[in-house]
Length: 286
Length: 260
Image (cartoon, rainbow over all chains, first blue to last red; front, side, top):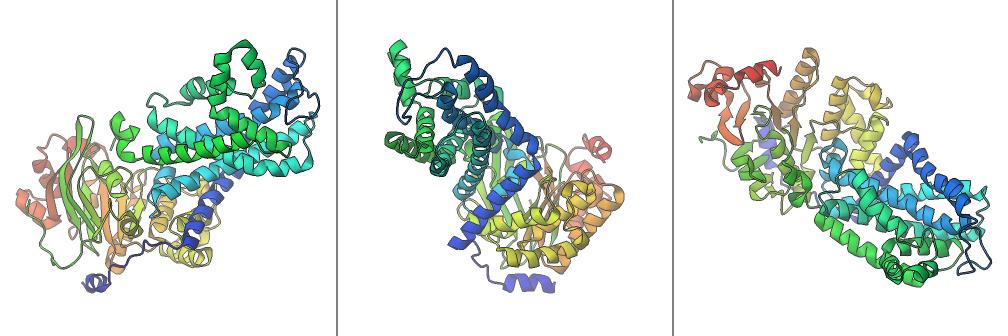
């Protein structure tokens, strides 16, 4: 009985007011764990690289003769088609990565990993944001690995472009991750990756400036042109493209920042477990 | 429902107050109330599907509480989640360790999720690993441990931030008889030695000891709550198995037996 007395005599302290440093410890821990997982899951890394490389080696090679690209900013000379689609393929890496990790966050809520995260006393918005950031960093590593291989394929942006790319990649990765989380929280039908591929990834990828310059799209279909202009993925691609050549696409930057804020805010609201899928699906077995 | 009499001035470790939860039309929890005292070992006894996991999901704020209140040491889970959850340690039913990384790395991650800096975390990790007699395995890859050892690491992790309430969801599933007895004995000692309030969810009747509190949860409703002796006495049965049988109408006893 002494133990009980001890406990009741203890003041119920407010241990939940975390300092800024503790918020940072939490973020660091989440990112660090993602990095460890990344190191240990090499297959995941390689398969994420194979996809854009197939596009680069096969698709772009085949279309090289068909699609000539005239001189458009940020390029100062005629460029090979491979050079043109490289930024779009980087954005594609991030799109896949963002969708995949967000889908996991939403649908694997029941699994140990997400439960461990969500039972942390830090505010949920901080946990989800940290997790998104961790996923973004993984996609940044993938993007640089892709660029390294692409360099041997004569895609040789200026050296400083690699550095300028980093903030662009962080932003676009974060936007696409938040978008993935928002979509998978809101749309019940997108429970598996095939659904996301068909209804999100492919339309976003094809209706963008990733594969062809928008002026060419405009020539064939003004409507499609406007759709492409409204597609946030177009702006992620352009932000990456200009950064890679040491320039800032200001409009795209504004769109990506704006979309990131909106998607993130929406995703955190939509993630509310009270409105989650599991509840609608009929709950857990136990 | 007659509640166990206890000092009303004592803040309960866990207070579930008239909580209901439904998935669409299916009622998972119906007006559930229960209390876990500090330094007590409370067994939440129910068959699969009784609502144990739903209750755990609500206590750990995985789901929003839509009806009723849950308080951990007086802190409402819905309105003060930070204060409530920092007093809580959980061992989930599903595997919650990363098997690719080491025991220490898993525990460091958990420490970070509680805002504990690495120097302090190292001290705490040494302490909890010692507590579960796994101090020599800290650099082992989790995937190389046995299921029983993994459970012990999960308990160590749940204790790392020194919670005063520990929840365990079917912690002995998949364990052999000896490992089961070890874990049970270990957690029971935690409640006695460290004054931790324990809520132990199980479908195995013999995991409830004579001195424990028991909550019988059946089809989303609490059928009995109190010290094992009282619950058995009130039901008129000879032991807890018979009491459970009588309370639940007996139809499911077969399932309980075979589930072991």
